Image (cartoon, rainbow, N blue to C red; front, side, top):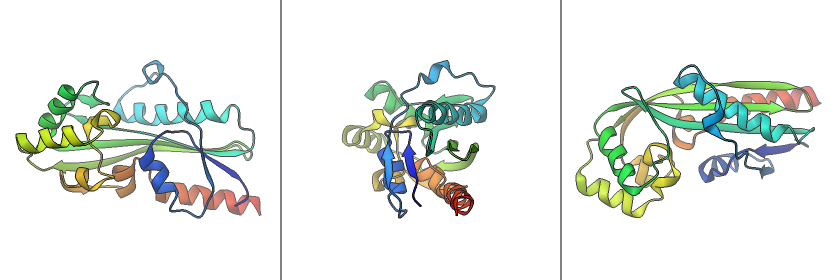
Length: 194
């Protein structure tokens, strides 16, 4: 595909996943103010933030495919964003320990040349193992928990080891990007281009 493909995110996990495709990927972080994005519920929030990221980057890219996403956990009425301190990270992990959690990944794919757009929210149900106090302490001490929503990332073995089971889109959960939906979108664009 002879098109510029831009990831509107600094996420290493998303970039690693995209690198499994035989495509040249550029990274241009959107750096939006997520607090300023209006939403109606948690599902709407995930999609709207992904769209806002994609649209910001797309505004300067007249011939590109923009990929954006936003992932967070939702449990007992709380949206779990990135913790602001190691203490908050420990609290989040204690709160999630042994519970069923909803993991939401909003995604937005924009083709600025063909004026195509696909966006939505993938909902994954996850059961976290019951974590010991020592496990939580060790995880927070050894992992960059402040960079991840809900203080963990299943994209790495250490985070995957916290999980008992999941039900839903695997890569939306593990890497914060539903790769199957993106491949479908890129396929449509490729066919439209040739």
